Image 1 (cartoon, rainbow, N blue to C red):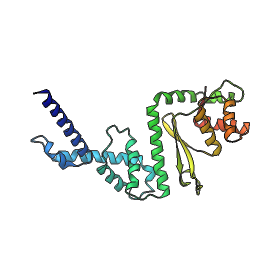
Image 2: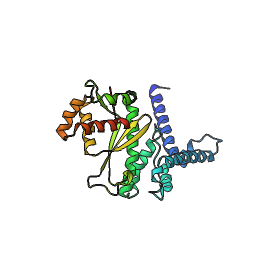
Image 3: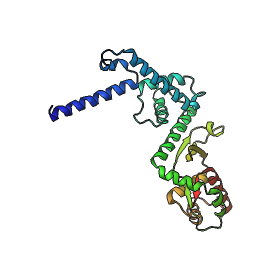
Image 4: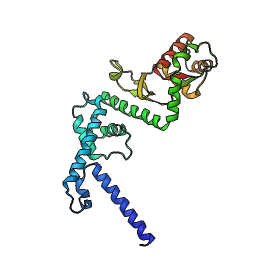
Length: 259
């Protein structure tokens, strides 16, 4: 066989595998019937795809528990989704739920409350992805967080102490107060910060002072208390006691750490 023939054969084989994988992922069984080995039952293809789709649906139902009371037809929508949208090749466990809530508005007109729920799923996934991409940064910060109880007491007196902002985070703007215990949200929405703490994702509602603090630390990087005060004074004037209390609260949450 010539090199040219070998290249064509490899290309055809790769296309065949890709076609089979895409078809099996969404239970398009008839597409692969011609690929089934002679003597093998076609029923086994159906058993394989139905089993995979059922497992995928069960997993999504668990991950989308937030929507149980918000979408009456959630199981039907999940069933429709898994038959239309192939699973990502390197699904990380939560990526399928992220894809589902991105697909959802294309087939259903969502209420503001439902859109907030999709933001929760997307934001949690964004934090998990950021943690995977910056594993070393996440581990390093969590090591620093373990010292918070001791170092936060030195914040007002130790000029060498540096304040670090959690690098694994993302922001979201909720349209309603449903998820934060408020009767209604302002016209500008409610800003929420999602961030990693050990192996979980935590959330905190950001008031104007909290937004200024996070933005200042994001802009400057790790810095001392005096430098942070200067940066914050450019945005808003905060009393020393108020700032120390806010930093203490943030350290308790795992949003900031010290070194």
